[in-house]
Image (cartoon, rainbow, N blue to C red; front, side, top):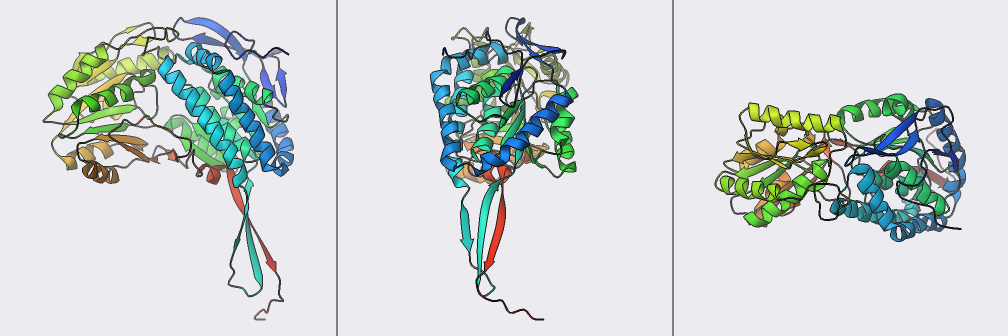
Length: 490
């Protein structure tokens, strides 16, 4: 049989429930647009609450048998998915370029990270063993089993749709759970339906992965509040994440939340300036800054501030911008008009508040120019908000205490980075910054399958990746056996 297409040219106008592609019928449809050209490339059904109900019901029915399947059987399915990622890489990269506006460096990094997530997930399948423990009761034997939670709901975002869906879906399936996935309405293919097709071809039994496309406003509450839900895995804004977590908690489902960030990039006076600017350009402008862990604020020592601003602005001006399908382009389009307008508003307000526009600040359709703002302060619009765009406000500091105060002056605590010529000094600064992830002599856009990923404060609950993900997707069960007659006090 000929291989199924993995590009946006395929027919994606269906839900995926219980191993079947469900045609739209009388449902409304959602247009999928290429943000670089504004052309419609596909349509998908606008799922309903009834679709969500059916997806959860079949997931719950299928899950118990899957949980009892041997670990190597679950791992083999995930490994087959890895093989498909290898074989169909170019198609996946093309789909990311067309649907999410991903230039090649970003699309490749997303594919590579998703592949690593699947490798790691296959290994997690064997981690659901039984441990024994001593008892304080004579003649008692204790066993602690790690078992799957049950049904995992996944609501994924549009910025890294393939990776951020896969990092929840693959480990959930590997550890014996079933999944109901609702991708973002802007990226329903790479965030959901493409993943369903991958696991379908990998031989995943019916009912274990179900994809309901639709608007969050229509089905989001039912996704988060369904009685069959055991874990709600959400990646998105803090504002929406709070609502999703509260809805899930009403049914005592565990919320696993990766939320917003306002990530500081600290450059000390003894840093290698060229290396710091290299990091800054990547960390600010990769995927047009539409990354929760991108640099939101550049905190630079006053003694090197002017030189840093000049170099950063020059580099930003020379970044190739345009259709991401052209491999030389680095900066692609913003996902939609609403996001674009919010970014430009932050820039305009920041200039009105006294910052200097060094470069950028303009747009052509959905292409926003890489923008550098000097003379910025922490309370200006592009600095105090998660701007989620190709915007670099640069803020001076006088000493380490001020740098730490500025870095921590936000409700968020997702990621941070520090450039310094003294790694011991940088390590001390890292300990003082309130962030779940801090990178020394690098920038904050990092994710590795074997390392826990998550934030502090308003940036989320729980951790993805590493073995920490087991705490979100599995639970423990204590079984004790009294091998000798126990003596009771009464």
